Length: 189
Image 1: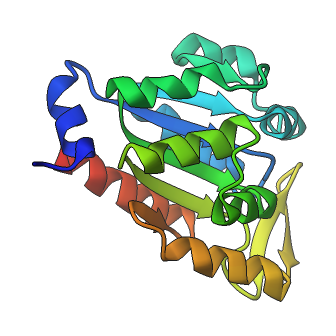
Image 2 (image 1 turned 90 degrees about the horizontal axis):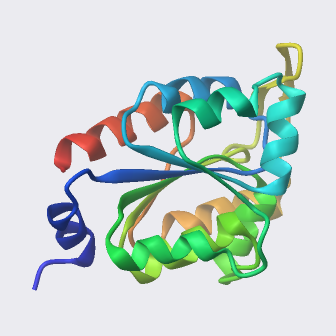
């Protein structure tokens, strides 16, 4: 029997991509720009993700005009049930906070983003994850386009490395890898 993620892609008339934004501003403008270049995307925003969009002057109204937007407003995260209907072929979490990465590695699904990752895994749907903490030294961009260096702690790097070993999960280290991985995945469908 074929894996579920292949079956889902073949039964959907218009395969969709679920894209989650958590509370990280790590190259968020580039992530959103790439996301907006794609067709058939549903956006999932954590509460912190919404706050970060505002900090980076990315208007939620513009995103809502371009795609369906699901916000973290319900305790049980009802939209994640769409994975069980074969509605999504891939989950992208970009950018992703170290908090979300840690919860995902521990199997904690207590927010919209962590619930998406858990349900995608249970349905064998591929996930592409871009964590904000993927190397010992990382250049990032603060609101106002100011570049600065951050130095993730060992605990954050350990969680990112652990996530790399999860089935149906690809962890990317930068925006270029994110674009390449998502593009490759879409060509596979």
